[in-house]
Length: 311
Image 1 (tube, rainbow, N blue to C red):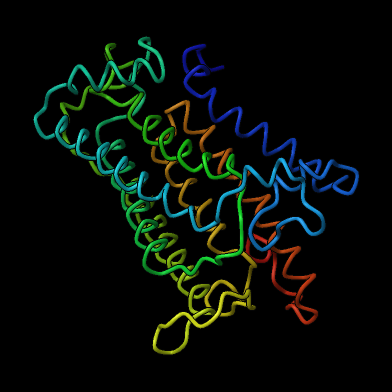
Image 2: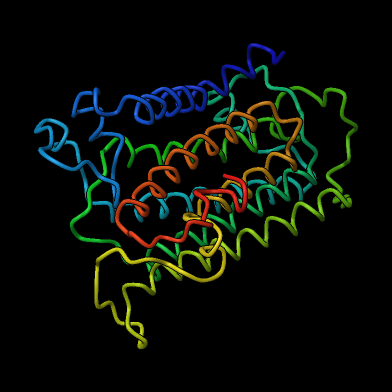
């Protein structure tokens, strides 16, 4: 059982998980009986609500292209976290007091050390690379439809996710708490690689690259051979992992967060981050798969929704 202060620091992600599981479950089982407001709030993009919208909910919708905004935030926030981490571990001193005070506010001042400097460095490097790549993709690769909308709540969740993930990684890291290590030896801020971490980095890089390929494939469906945007319609993607699943970009998102959890397995908040990503991507991939099947009569039957050959 996790101590109360670890649960407190995970409260944000627990609420996100409960919301997505409850509403997603209702949508999957009794959607036709749900109020239009709930259905419209949950559905967006290609699988947006069909029919007459709820006027009040429509007032709370913003262009789906605004997704790129929170990747600006994610890139800046992750780079800031990476810089703070590097300053701490390269100087061999605890993090600056204002950083620890900020983490105390976001989590609790009773935080304990649960991850080594090596694990923290690996995790922060990987999440920073992911945020920077997603920033590049959303601004210079992806093509967003000018007609599609998302609910303001879905837009804000993007900021919450990346803010909370960076805080979670640092909150229980050595050098970022007021308490000393708990059942963890002090490494003196030395970098100590291991086979486990090397495997984690390898799997993450594989997923990172193939998620990029998936987003390039989706973007190219709306571009000509010269790279000029010529359409905003949804077409049937093929190639790479699209031949196995409907949403390989979502599958590899899960893989990357599984890796982060494996790197920071003693960090009690990361299990909630992983469960949030898993539940969110699972529901979105199910809706996407359902949309493809409904809109493409000859949709390949061998394609699964999310996990190749399984789900």
